[in-house]
Image 1: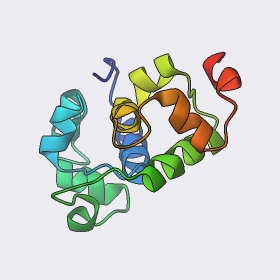
Image 2: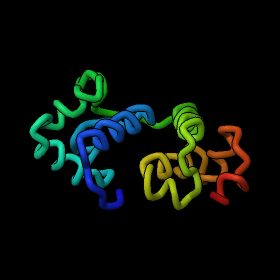
Image 3: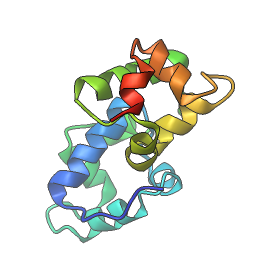
Length: 134
């Protein structure tokens, strides 16, 4: 579940970029499933956006290309997402991921991927002890 927050136009666009970079489908159904219902509602209320499609396009993405119907997390995509978040200086602790990027955390913990957040972080070349201490 995504923590409650004030969804400004800029915050919506930034979150769209983060989700897209992590390979997440930007379809409204997936956004609701991930707990982004508040962000969807804010996009519709924002007079400069007016719809979710407009928000995705305001982020500079093609809605059809950025919102595939099916999305499969692979080990490679998980490692790429973790690496990108690390380069951005994001909190990669378990708690931080649970709050900010639950979709990535769940995908990494799946038995057919890494089985644990620690194994995924280590596969991305990170020292888990350093990640866990943030």
